[in-house]
Length: 215
Image (cartoon, rainbow, N blue to C red; front, side, top):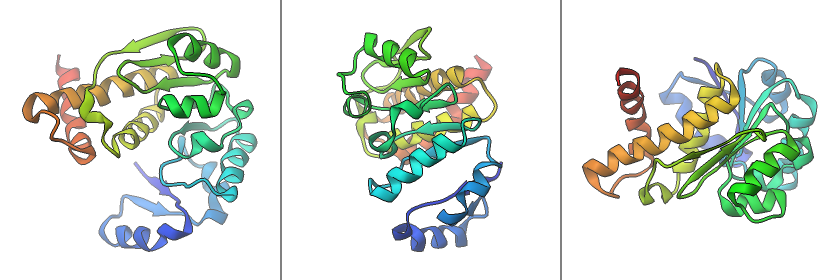
């Protein structure tokens, strides 16, 4: 599958270096984003975005102008988004502080259900227990362990959620993503304890998915 990738100007050097080693993505200039959003199955916004005024404008511009596109919001985007622009085309993947930053209330099982219903979006709250809701239903995920508190594991979940959302119902994609991400972490824990990182998690995901298919 083809991936379009756009980042902040400070990362352009890194992007070009990655491009020399990979043909799996096309780098898109920030000014051309509107053109490419129309071509995508899902738009993931947030990891590495920063919290500048320009970033805030970008996040809310995309949500406001492309209500027919599918979005996954994570990381910095969760501190910038106007929740009134969220809708059934949006999955957000906050941890507890990010949830409070968006909605102004403490994260809890009941508030995940209430905020998903109020704003019509899908919320996947990350934590010791993951709570996933579309406002009508709420599911609890128990896979995962403390090794997944390391930096980058949330980005893995966001990317996996976006990938699954390309061809699946968004609520199903969010539920499957938190399960698979945590299940991969549990498989790694069985082999190495907490001595694994986000790169190990990425490498484990295909094996975890194969196990689920073959089960």
